[in-house]
Image 1 (tube, rainbow, N blue to C red):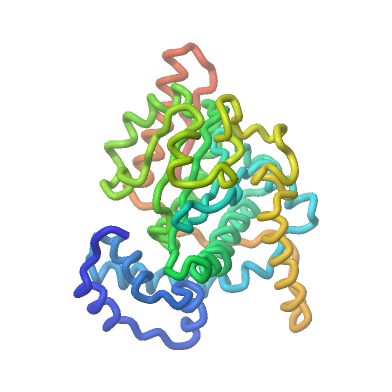
Image 2: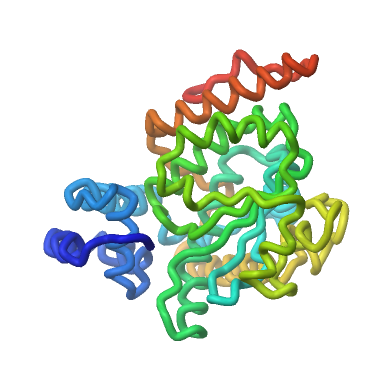
Length: 335
């Protein structure tokens, strides 16, 4: 968690008075770990109590206005549409670290986000966040007998190309949602299978990040297997870290062994949970099918600047290497 003073936490607690209709959504946020939750928001606002308090209140109102508490009862249907989302938004739970932190694998380079509308990808991302916070983390906390409120993310850059810039707006939307409403939920980001294009861009982007974010990012050599085995067992390694050349291809290790696949036990459990919650809700009130539209706050100037820098650096790389995938006209905000 980093250093957050007990005095700051006490001041934060003194400011918090949560009544209906925000009480239920606040419970879904803290899951019984109030001090740790206050610590997360304080850390995200550099221990400024007033700003952390505003951030939490804004988060609770966002949840209420967008019905986030019921998002785990709104399945993406039909199943084939959801399978398309899973095949193009590569993320899954591969296991747990030895300290009990969930290990989420993300196929950054090969995620295409081209099988559904943007709203479905945002909905799916929030559903995984909520399932992590309401089911995965509480279960881990109970199993290990201590508060577990963060996760580890292993980002596979296999297949990263200039064309990935076409997704920069969606990725900025998702990261803005996380920054403002799920702060400090990731303990460490491990970057693996990084091609030269990533390394060149990282040199420019790294200085723009806040220090606490920079400290979380570790770029590992190759597939990162040896370094990751220091903190987790082999069974928890993402499939793209099992050996050199084992990148996150959607066509390799399909099915139960590929944590990106809908057939993997994590996604089967998640989708079953959502369908069951939907049936329970539907018995009381019919649920309208269709994508789940969420209001997205405007990205902070810092994040917009980082996104613009990524676009600029990728284009420089393309020009220097005679590639024709330049995206000079790409807009970060707006249509």
